[in-house]
Image (cartoon, rainbow, N blue to C red; front, side, top):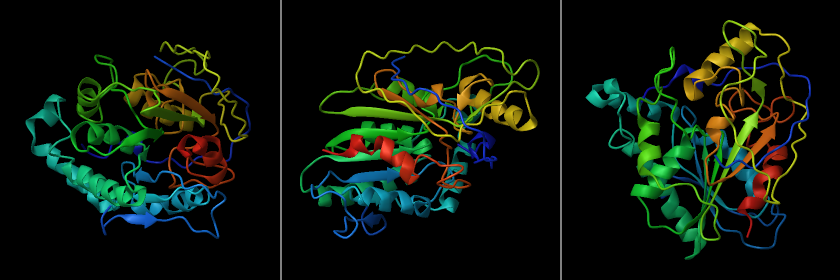
Length: 326
């Protein structure tokens, strides 16, 4: 797996506001960075289960320091898997695998280095849990890599997988101009990992951002998408997003076309909503509690907490942190 262009954070301007609904959709050891609860920062006297944060493609451990401190304020101790930006170059090992060129690449052994870092972080969190359960927070590629880890690596008592802007579904096959940037990795995950569930024992919560709508390179940018999206709101846990930072293109621009081409490589369609990198529809899983948040950008890199908040900005965390609390 190489670093695809569509996974690079794209600087975006401070956009005008729009109000859109959130929906439920069905369709480490010493090498890990530990953030323990501080009594001076914690707003909760109740000990919560620890959380392990898994960095996304191209991100490093330090990108999640502020998120870890924010969670600490809610009484959630965290361990961030120890990943540096240069570590991602290890994925180039996949280039010598014939399956890479066939589009049938598997996560192991190419991504064993990452899964080992996850295992170190999980073992550190287990010490904090004192025999209790853990939460895993996977950002971007960390979300689907968490599914691989849960399937093949661990017997830890994981009670929650919460994904933030993760591309969780493989791109459709046979569409002109669409190339699977993961070279088959997401196909493997879909076929070999357990289906998403939302049960008392294990909950999948998949959060997508609606920051900018892409547009097609040619044609009317406001034409309706051809991707079917089933929306079900029969569950009471449905909230309304109200972030004034959502960018709505009234006319196709170079920026919306550029973003749209990135979306197309992930879900097969350009004129859809997403967080600037991952389309909304790709960040949801059938069987999970699927949530969309307005005005939320993909990456901690190139974001800020006011004009371009990302999933880990304090105001955004406040909208999903209750899933981590006992």
